[in-house]
Length: 513
Image 1 (cartoon, helix red, strand yellow):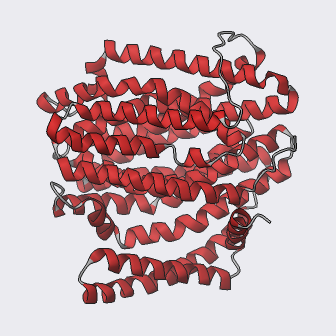
Image 2 (image 1 turned 180 degrees about the vertical axis):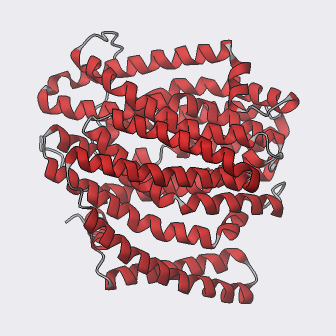
Image 3 (image 1 turned 135 degrees about the vertical axis):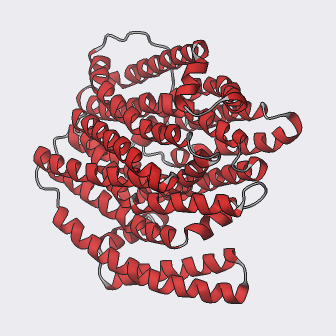
C-alpha cells in the first residue's frame, strides 16, 4: 500500500480553520441561546461554573496526555513501530481509569470543590451550581478518551473530525437550553453529558476509518508508558496551572456585582473563538510535524516549522485583534444582546473583550512556543513559565480589581501573557539556538502596516453604512469584508512571506494536482 502523502502545516491549518470556525460558530449559538434564555443571571453564573469544572479538572490531564501521546507516538514510530497499537491501548485504558477516579472523588466532595471554583457563591446560586456539577462531571468518561482520539487522528493527518469536535457538543447543549424552559433547568446538565458523548462518538468513528481499534491493556510497566508518564506530569502541571488562571479570575469575579462572572465568560467566548479557529488550528497542525522532526533530530527544519507557524498565525490574529478592539460593542451586541441579555451586559462584556484582545497576539505566539518545548520534550520550562504567569496574574488581579473591576481582571491576564512570552522566547533561544525572530519581526511589521490600513478603511466605512442601513449586522459584515480585502491586498503589495504560504496552502488543499 502506498504511503499516505503528508500535507503541509498551512494545508492542515486551512482544514482546521474552516471546520473549527463552523464548530465554534455553533459554540456562539450556545452562548447566544444561554444569553437569550437566562441572560446574565444567577442561573447563567452557576451554569458557567458547572460547565467549566470538568474542563478545568481534566483539561490539564487530558491536554497533557494528548501532547505527550503525540510526542511519544512519533518517537516510537521512528524506533519500534510494532509497539504502537499496544501503546495506544494502554494509554486509553489509563485515561479511562483516571477519569472514573476523578469522577468518584468529585461526588464525594462536591460541595467544597464547587465552592472552590466559585468562592462568592452562596444560597440558591451555590445549590444550582452543585446540582449542575454533579451531573456534568459524568462527561469526564468521554472527555478523557476523546483527547487521545484527537491525537491519533492528528498523527494520521485526519483533521476534519478534530476541527469539528465541539459541533455535536454544542448542538446537544443548545437543545437542552430550550428544552429546559419547558422541562426544568435540571436538563441543562444532561445536555452537556449527551454532547460530550456525541463528540466522543464522532471521533471514534473517524478513528475507525483510520484503522483504529481498542483492546483494554493494563500493562502500565512498559518502557514507553514509563517515559510517557515522566513527560506527562510536568505537562499536566503546566496546563493545569494555565487553566487555573481562568478559575482564579472567576473566583475573584464572584465578589464583584452579579453578572461579572458571566461578563468574563462571554468575553472569553469571543476571544476563545479567535484562539480556537486560528491559533489552535495552526498549533494543532504544526505539533505532530514538530514532534516528528524532533524525533528525527532535524533541528533546522524544526525551527523553520516553528517560524512559519508563528508567522501564519500572526497573519490571521493581528487584523482580527484590531477588528475586535475596534468593534467590540457591535460584536458582543450582535452575538448576545437579546432576550434577558441587556445593553448594560453588552457594555460590560465588550470592555472585557477589548482588554483580552490587546493580548491576543501574546497568547498566540506563546502557544506555538510552548508546543515547540513539548516537541523537544522539555517539559520543565513551560511548567515554570506557567507558574510565573499565574503569580503575575494574581498580583495584577489584586492591584487592578479595585480601580477597574472586571476590566482589571482581563487586563491582568493580558499583561501576564506578554511578560511570560518574552521570558519563554529568551529561554527557547538558549535551548535550541536562533529562531529566526528577526525575519518574523520583519513580517510582523508588514502585517501591522496592513492592519492599520484595514482599520482606516473599515471604521469610516462602517459609520457610513450604518447611517444608511440603520442596522448593525449588515453594516458590520460589509465593513469587515472590505477590511479583509484591503488587508490581504496590502500584504500582497508588501510581499509578506506568510501571505504567500497561506495562498499556496489554500491552492494545495483545494487544487491538489
